[in-house]
Image 1 (cartoon, rainbow, N blue to C red):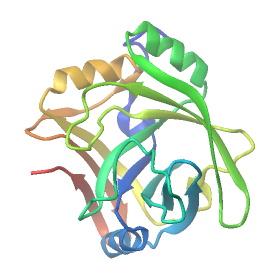
Image 2: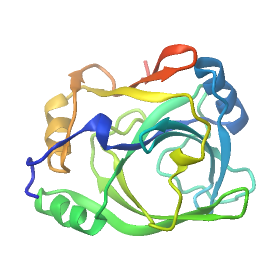
Image 3: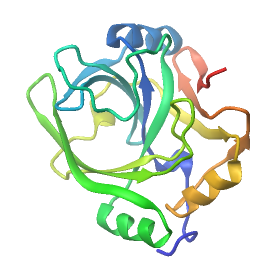
Image 4: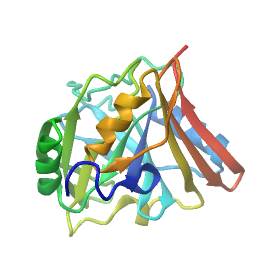
Amino acid sequence: MRAGENLVPARTAVDHLLLGTADLERGIAWVERRTGVKAVRGGSHPGVGTQNALISLGRRQYLEIIAPDPAQTVYTFPIDVRTLTEPRLMTWAAVTGDINALAKTAREAGHHILGPRDGSRARPDGKVLKWKILGVLNTLGLQGVEPIPFFIEWSTDSLHPSQDSPTGCELQSFEIEHPDPARVIDALKGLGIEAQVKRARHVKLNATLKTPKGEVELIEALG
């Protein structure tokens, strides 16, 4: 695929949305109050310093509540969630079925990338989930909110988290706001994604969910 061809809408491209919180239990409660669905603990990310809890968004999509893991002494996650006073929708992962081909396309589009590299975590039941991820180095993130996703390709022998996480919610829409929307749109096009990007003073990731409590917006911005 050449850059700009066969673009996938951002809402369809979402594998999962990452909601940062300084404390996992508080993050779980925050999501449950808004959606009526209680997230289940997913496990820890060894060497990263984080742990998570998940709810399914249907359609092989999910919401990941990500927080510091007090059992780990090293913190290498690229966004610091440890000082957050409220949960924040801070970044997102886009799905790919061929991460090596995507890496080639991204390089041809002028992107500087990190990976692909292997990732894994053990679930509370002991089963290990495996994936490959591809990072896209850019300067478009502001105030700890990243509009450009990282990409994930799940191992064929790993159950997608949307399939065994608590259900009841569905991703209805996903939009981005940014001070320079044209740059974000162009960057995403080079990665095969078409997105609605509105001009705004701060970066925002706007996700609307259909939930047992009705339509809920998960919006984050500083200021």
